[in-house]
Length: 224
Image (tube, rainbow, N blue to C red; front, side, top):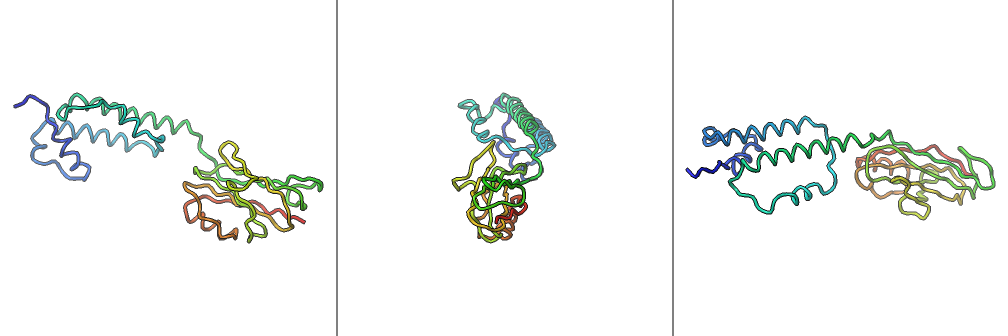
């Protein structure tokens, strides 16, 4: 006997456990391996009870960088409590991080007329006025605004066009009305960039929704 603790579970048993296989003959007869399995199973149950969370970017690298430069392959008893403690602490930190983040409300889009000489606002405008479009709510890191004329002509995008600004992480589009027609905006919020527009409001909204984004249309503004 070498007097060193058995590390066979980490080398062989852990892979079997993750694959859903039962203990082998060695593990059944080895109290150290049995204890290791119980530790991992207890940790797995605790993590499974946590709600879904999004870990901060780069957390894997920060955890690996914090590990000692070398570890004995047979020193399970020396590093096992530390590893379990680190995993539990990380789970608690992630859970608190999730609670601190406000839950976004439903996606909404606001389309406002900024009058120049007409003096009119709300649902009508004149050539030379501007439309200011903003959005709030919705869940997703990628946000886009698109403005259409007569539902078939895409006339502006944000991000992308000179009238676009990002305010508090959300796009805001200001567009000078240069032609009469009926103008409507489409807000798109999702986990990834929406498909490139085909040019028609309804078609683009369906494509973005099919790609997993939330979409919302504004009311129409008639420009004379």
